[in-house]
Image 1 (tube, rainbow, N blue to C red):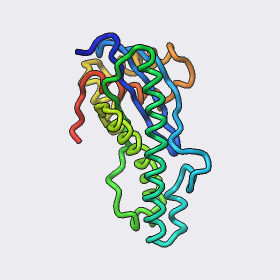
Image 2 (image 1 turned 90 degrees about the horizontal axis):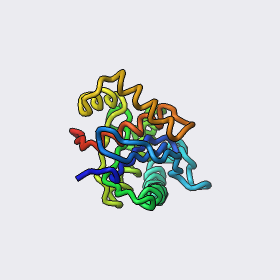
Image 3 (image 1 turned 30 degrees about the horizontal axis):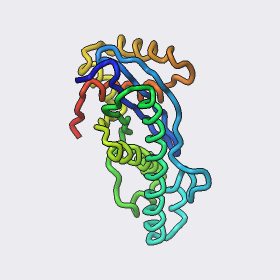
Amino acid sequence: MKNANTAALGFRAHSGWAAAVALVGPPRSPEVIDCRRITLVEPGSPGGVQPYHAARTMDLPKAEEFIAAVIVTIDHSALLAVRVFAEAISGQGHAIACCGIVLASGRALPSLESTLRSHAMVHTAEGELYRAAIAKAAKALNLRCVRVPERDLYKLAAKHLNISEPKLKTRITEMGRAVGSPWSADEKCATLVAWLSLAGFEASH
């Protein structure tokens, strides 16, 4: 049973980092208790924050080997970052029940060979790399994870939480006042997907 000590985490990832938010409280009226930016790649890592860009300069066998190694490295970095964040929230006496991750709106990735031929697909692949790493971290920490495409976020949240979209946007903006700046689309989307997770939303994919 969810109560005032139940927490949910929310993430919106970028290349090399993510906006991370923690919500606590009953699903009808949660509060933001932490908002930070977590680093998902160690400084000096091969390929930096854009490894697929680096892989474009390699022949395919080398690129496949390189990306496989990068995935392992980033998965490790993401697990450390998410664990530190989760431990900070747990250390305040909250029980983390779940998390949410904001997805991109793009289509599924093709093969690595096809991906590397397209600059647009390279950007998509890098975004998916970091989102997948956060999802794996959540699984390793035994957190139920909800993933929602950004384009559907407010519509689904309004329906599931039974709040109109305009009121929901106002509420999300107000929730940021407790934590201060930055409170951009990154933090707002991370908050909303965490709220959906806290409220028991189950994505269809």
